[in-house]
Image (cartoon, rainbow, N blue to C red):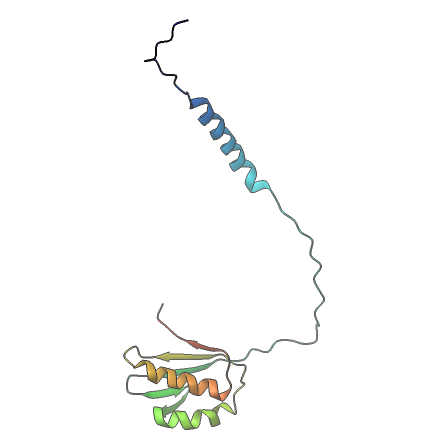
Length: 130
């Protein structure tokens, strides 16, 4: 037998691609119908205790350094002294939302945040446009 070295064997991958496409189509049809079920036994909760909705505390700082807490107005210097007294009549578990003008310096907002943290609030958020 004489081989011609110029003839190179060719690999025909068309049947392989056809088989893979059929398997992919079968997988796409069957996958949404597969249901994973895991039985979980949950503990019983107490029916007598209900959660109370705690209203959040809104603090806003304008570009003139005027601070508004819910409906009360303070200047920046008054706020630092009076917020601790103001917080005595609030629930310390309430969420505090601080919104400030974007032209303010970083230190001003951080000093207000520090005063809120020192008063004992743990859930403090900074509001943004978005």
